[in-house]
Image (cartoon, rainbow, N blue to C red):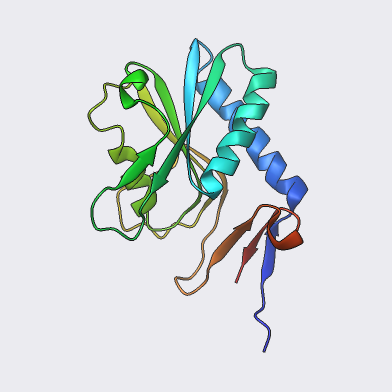
Length: 169
């Protein structure tokens, strides 16, 4: 029996959502000199890279890509980062992930910056599923989906020879 999946966003629609998120980030930070875009591995980082590429073409400020790798199954914060967290002092950080489901991943992502006096911390996700267990909201979302708990959202970025897409299964 084949598993049915419903196409939510195709490659072009994903790029349109990323473009819109980038413009919203620009509007929210037009007076900044630099912003930091922190992508949560694996797919949040793909989205962060694409947002940065758009911002590099449209924004007067510079943007720097940060990478966060979280142990999502852990009951405590365990993160590997490719930057010195003190370099984020008094800067704007955009925390990026692919899908916001329970909010646990973004909550752990926030934890990386808890001891740092940031100017502001914003969140960006491609898909917001509205099933939060944690008090997390998104500042920039490509699509908000009302789904049932049993359904799963798959974000595919050129994996297994497929085009970029978002599926609901």
